[in-house]
Each structure stands twice: as structure tokens, then as C-alpha cells.
Image 1: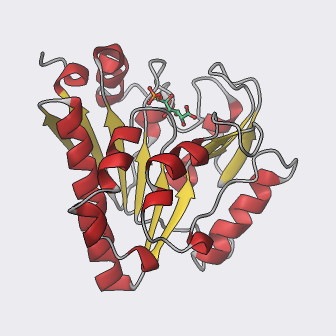
Image 2 (image 1 turned 180 degrees about the horizontal axis):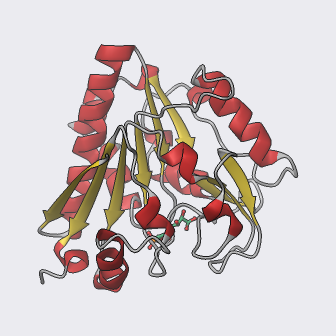
Length: 241
Ligand code: 6PG
């Protein structure tokens, strides 16, 4: 059974600080214990403040960047340099400002017709998890949509019901752009820890439904049975302001 922990921060800035600290602490622990820290970054706008905070002292100086491998929980199928890409936003906010070896950052080939299968193969290879094993990420950062989606798993869409594939293509997503590539629940639920980073009053309703276990919402189905499920919230999202 996943262990769930909810942490409410007094502001969006404190939330960003808390996420940066979590990343630095988990990275240090993982490298000490297993020699590597494999993390999947979230897309969207919420985590960008945390990425920028992580790129600065003291957190940036604590992370053993040479032993960190970065993946992306989902990617938008837009042009390589288009600012809409989740990896482009993460590079601008974090990855270009820390000494992570370029080969340790794994963008999703989201425009390629076989991009999902290629990314699944990459994850299996980098995490030494040939089928039928499921790669185990140390930490997965996730956002939350107002409809209860996370990564690019949207309510009622086939990708949210996938039980075998680890990475799939999404077409017709209700959030622009419509075409994406996303981790699926089997991969998310194999993680040692997932952390939902949620900020703002507009997320309050979806968050309540997720915490109540409304399983029609893909975010509510992210519960690593052998891992941690963390909710890092600001007061606005938690309904405390
Ligand atoms: C994306 C994200 C998506 C995002 C949520 C929240 O590609 O947009 O993967 O799941 O995390 O929609 O987005 P905001 O943080 O911008 O509110």
C-alpha cells in the first residue's frame, strides 16, 4: 500500500523551496545507496519555480549531478525547439544551469511515430529493467490538472487505462497540444516515490477529489504500492487561505 503524505507550504515560493529540497535530499540518498538518482520531471508551469530554485544554492551545490539521470513524465508533440515542450522549459529553468552531463538528460522523441516505444526501450535500458520487469524510478515529479489529469493521462482517455505499456502516445488530449507522449500508470506506480506539486486555488477541487480517492481521475490512480505518494501543496491549493 502506498504511503501518502501531504505537506502544505505557506506560499508558492515556499512550495518551490520544499520541492528543491526534496529533490536534493532524495538525489543525495539515492546516489549514496545505489550510485544513481533517476528522476522524471513534470511538465506544465507549476514546477518551474521549483526547478529555478533547484538551480541555485544551496540545493544545486548539494546534488551529485554527475550521477543524476533525468527523464520526462510526458512530452508535448511539438517542434524540437518550440517553447511548448516540457523538456525545453526544464532546460531553461534548471538543466542548462547545473553541471549535469548532457548525456544524462533524456528528451522524449515525441514527434517520432514510434517515439513512445523508443522511450520505453530507453527507460528499460537505462534502468536495467528488460520486460517483463518495470523500471523503478527514484522520484517522479507530477503536476495536477483541474480535471484530475496528471502527466498526459486524462480522464476517460485510453492512455489512463493502459495496464501493459509503460509509455504511450496520446492523441486528442483536452489540453493543448492534443498530441503527446506519456508515462502510464504501470510505470508511475513502480516508482520509489512520486510527488504531486500543486499550487493555486484553481486546483483545490481536483486535489480534493484525488485525495478522496476518486479513481475516475487518473491522478487518483497514481499510488505506488511499494513506494511513497507525496503531495506538496501551497495553502491556496490546500484550501487553507
Ligand atoms: C503538461 C503536464 C500536465 C501539467 C498539468 C498542470 O504537459 O502540461 O504534463 O500534466 O502538469 O496540466 O499544469 P500546470 O502546472 O501548468 O497547471
